[in-house]
Length: 309
Ligand SMILES: [Mg+2]
Image (cartoon, rainbow, N blue to C red):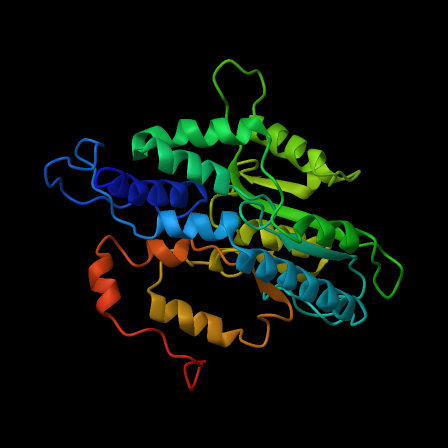
């Protein structure tokens, strides 16, 4: 166990990178005790967090409840032509058909099996990209509890003019070549197949799935893709597991600045923006930096926004 734990911490870092977050920070070697050469684990909580996602009824109840509340909010937003969940969207929106924006990883697709696999194997950071790509290629991720039902139900709804809801997936799964495959974007094919296996197909699914680097300007910061959706659709709802799914610069700011950003939009959380809990990785962790003991010594963020907004 003494050797396994450091590797667990490394994996949390590596998963973080896969989700489009900041590159995993490293610290100087203290003797290579992690089993990954000069790399030293920096994150904490990977084992417990993954078990919570995989085996707790508390997570399942949370996720299903969030998706149920999101569907109620979607009905409300569809009836109001001025309603939008995209801060950059202003003006008369009545001419635009409705849309929902969703993240993929650990919002729609549950990657905890990949996380558990890498925890058990003691995956090192350098090994992560290939293992993550292999997981995506398996096309076997189950749905996050509540997600599939929500997507199917959302697509059945219409706005006040009878236009159906289109569900867009903005993901930092990456469009890039893979050895021994002719496709220029194999993770797109894999993700489409995974979604279809979960009975989430739609006539526009390929266009609805927007990967990192699929087009120029589509980098890990998702703002440009959200804005492109907003040019042609009224964004009624946004669902993700990371602040970066909702607001720009989530990975650049301190926890306090991130909290101010949350507070500026406090009326939107739980009404237009819905967060699926993800304690396994995310920008919440990357902004803490490598010294988690120092982070633990800090007081928690305030319970309410006060004057911060
Ligand atoms: Mg995600």
